[in-house]
Amino acid sequence: MLLTIAGSSCSGKTTAARACAQLEGLVVHDFDEIGVPSGADTAWRQRSMDVWIERALRYQASGIDVLLTGQSPLGEVLASPSATELDGIAACLLDVDDEVRRHRLEERDPGKWNLDAKRSFIGWARWHRGHAGDPRHRPEVIRTGWAQMRWDRWSGWTSADPRWTVRIIDTTDRAVEQSAADVRQWIMDARSQLACGQLGLAGGWAT
Image 1 (cartoon, rainbow, N blue to C red):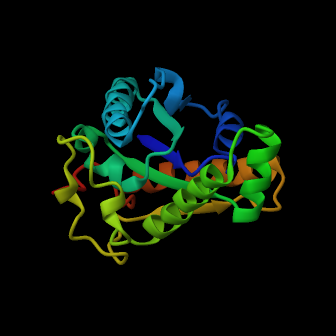
Image 2: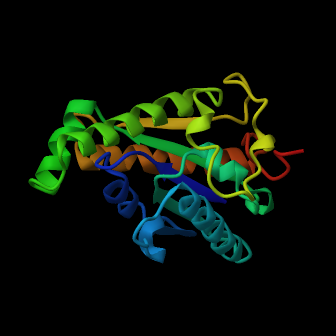
Image 3: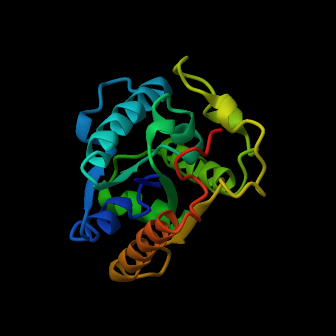
């Protein structure tokens, strides 16, 4: 199974995911491990997601789940050419209050981000929130880029579709240990749902 943790910068994705690395039968990876070229754009992110899915399929063959952190929302994961080969997909959005995100950006990289850059991070975070709740929320934001993407797989879905499920974990005012515990619980829930046939994005979800 592929478990994805998405979210705009400084939501705590990497830290929370690393705390789950000791779970049995799970490997943890960060999307950017494959290297981020200068000028990386939406098309690069979409192509790279399919690279990660191919890697997840190799782990899947050995009975190992992959926890992947990055920027890719559920809609991009599902539209990736190889996504239908996975035996299960679960998505999580790690989020944080906008003002807290601004503070974390400055604290992590003092003086690096100007006002426009910070607004971009905040805007991306707000879009993620809308997308997590409803596939009809401004899909044009991601439906550009790599021509191989299969947007038709979910373009007719609504928020009521049981396959469109994103666990939202808000890290605002929560200790790292608390957020990590929330992520571990989400992983265990997804695994349990897959095992008992209740996971909305189990194999065959696109048919």
